[in-house]
Length: 327
Image 1: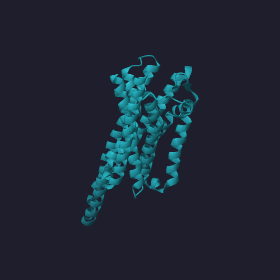
Image 2: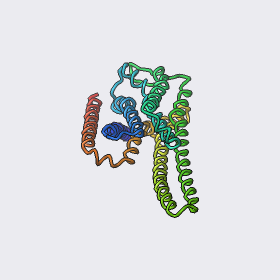
Image 3: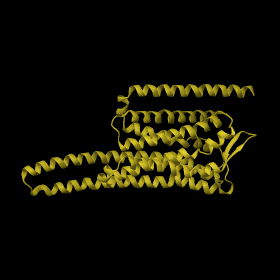
Image 4: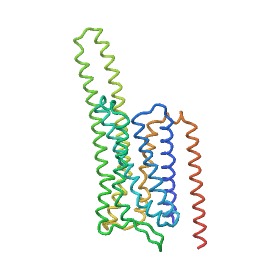
């Protein structure tokens, strides 16, 4: 009973956080007058994470945590497409990382790339996620007697599971880690090159030396700040992504291969599956705290949304409890 209440309200808290904070990020970026390519990709990530809450988490919370029975058409739509927003969110992080690498390594070429380039990358994310979600649509099953909805791929279950883990965790983590490692190395080399060039300026005339050094010192300071921010972003993004997805992927693998039994630990891991979609907007807001002060009205609207969401689930919980006690 204790674990049931814990998983129920933990899943509700994660769902509410996903909806509230991703909506906040989307609204803040939409209201920002100065649009940037970074903001464009972050907004795409926030939309993908919001879809995780609405398509993946919401049906699971209602059906599993509050015992709301599945209807056949709801089952095939939401359960069949449950992995779609997860894939989109993952690919959005990869796309954001690749774009940051492109901007750092080839700044001149990246400036020449317009909106068409950015939209093509985003569309590619969604199309690839839709393609990889096809097995989930094919193998979804509906049990009318028990009003249950689940995936059953038979002897292909283990194969599909390993593909999901590699597509959703292993390969993206390697790509993201490689991107930010290359970014750090590139910035470090440029900073080092600046200091080396500054050392050769001793043979120039005094006036030229003073002017040249002041310009390079300003450049060096900018690079140093970018390097620190990149390292922080690398640590937060990669660590959060791995920490959020590794436990549930490992737990699911062990469960399917028969190494562990379905119990309290796995139930907690299952609840934490969409946690990364809550962490992503928090990471962005952490690095852009000034937006809070500039958008007080937007924050009030988000507060109203959060209050409504909480009251809705409180009402749903009391209604579910009344129905169960009546039975």
